[in-house]
Image (cartoon, rainbow, N blue to C red; front, side):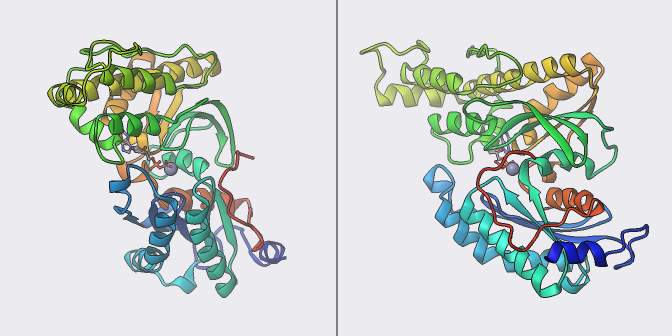
Length: 367
Ligand code: KG4
Ligand code: ZN
């Protein structure tokens, strides 16, 4: 049992005797970003990400193409992360990787690579949950939130309110019952004829638009859960009716030319109004979670936390309700290996190592 052996042979008294610090090579490959980071004692020495542009013309990530691109990218990305950190592979104290959730073919590339390196170097392997890593991206830079804190994690596949009691103890207290916030952005963008991923484009055009021009409904979902599928449907009907109605009426659909003309003439206002609604759905639930828990250190995380409308509204809510607000630096919001590295650092301190028999998993809840 490799993990048992590692636990016995590692002296984790302070300072760690391996290299004078705990240096971890971390890999992220759960979706369409191949990323590697070197992290020492919770500080990020490098964070290198190769984005995959191959998916743009398909309107979404094509899993098979993503796996192939990871295979092509992983060695150069790791090499660059090591050289940027001025480190060599053999000086790593552990190898960390995203184990779940994500696209299985993509996850397998990172997990197999990490396992091979850990085996070759005879170093511990650390398996990281991608959504926990998004939350802990808030611990990379100072100032850091104190425990317990709440985190609204908003990505392409998830929307969660997480109660974080310690770096390794988290509980999901609210989540989406259908689409994720990132999907709401991307699917709305697709309806507007924008390429994938549409979230950043909606953000860009929204800056020029009037968020009060069009009114999209806010779903009434009980508790701390979210729903975005109704919003998507009302946007679809609104565009199909060229702005005349948000409900489906037999025979009332505008011609494709009329629909396109309506979008072209109102793109900025449509983006601003859609963004405003997605942001208000998110923040209203977050406010409710703050009231329920009484917690005042509040974070956001995940790809959608790069959205300028959400960032501004979140900061404003913080001032208004006296929250201490935290947002990761831009490069740690979207998928990146630095967040895997910081999570692995805390798992290392708890000697939470994985056995080489561990496998990647497409779906996996917090444990
Ligand atoms: O966390 P992430 O990089 O990957 C997942 O784990 O899913 O999140 C990707 C999502 C995509 O849906 C993308 O459109 C969205 O984050 N996103 C944005 C922005 N930047 C990325 N959505 C709105 N505004 C942005 N600026
Ligand atoms: Zn992510």
